[in-house]
Image 1 (cartoon, rainbow, N blue to C red):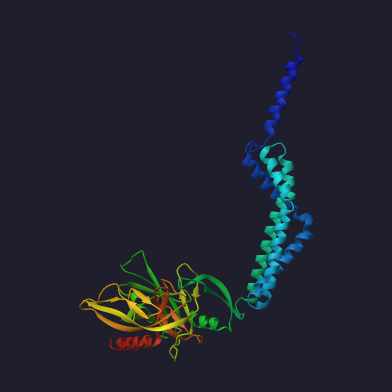
Image 2 (cartoon, one colour):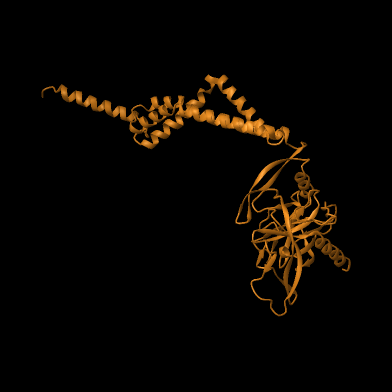
Length: 423
């Protein structure tokens, strides 16, 4: 058989192609996988290259730590610096964007070439490491350093023993159809000399978080607020919080949970007094000696659902209303009906139905205002600028929150004392 050199050369070429294909990465034939490989491997290479530019990175880290520290310090200590620091932060952001825009064309070209072909994967990986990878690493390093500077300022300037306290604060954002809209809560920093901070600290150890059931061992627990009104464990809350409830528990500031029993209730005033047994030494809130007036600034302090820690939502008392309440005794229970609507401009209330036989209508005083409250805040104390109780939160109606004044609270506390003494 004659020798066929052409056939031999063809077989050798096919063998070489097969060998090259066996060396190709398994992801080379998938476009998306190639992109992921170039970006992740290139970024990893950029991380490794930090050692080659340590002086440059050290300067970036130091600048970011200083900026984070200064921004946190300016939040409370040097408020006049905030505009300048904000401008500086914008400038740093603009610089980072500029650093990205500058090599953006090269990054796009590298990724485009990777998408089209697998012939130059390693070359494209190296190109991305020097552009996009470097940018990503620099952003990660400077962001982490900035957060570290902020954390350092928190610890050194505003930690335990400092003159500052951080409080979850609801702040008015706007007014929508006559109803104030609050944003938050935001963990805002307060100087201890500020009235809101002093009031908050006065209430912090006196506030309690209440939970209860309607059936023994029920899975769904109802939650609300209350506060200590005596050293021997009397707690003030709302009547609607405990009416028809069992297995009432009170968790204090330290996190200790204790069982509480109902001592006195007043449906018309929507007040109730609970008692924690066999313990003394609780820190009660003081009651204001003078009644609050329209225009007074007040501070509700309450536990809110899904928010860790106590919150505040400052506002003002706008009006003092004589609100009609319908009360009907049904056997051993009392049914209380509040008005269905409230007209703030006319100071009038409307019920959803006519007064029924056997139902009495009584008048109960309420403080209406624009302070923050929402379902679950019932029973929270409403404080004046001295940290004294002027009312207890009760509910809301047509965009206005209302609270029960301190004089009614003191009356039910006196009644609770009489009931306990008679048993």
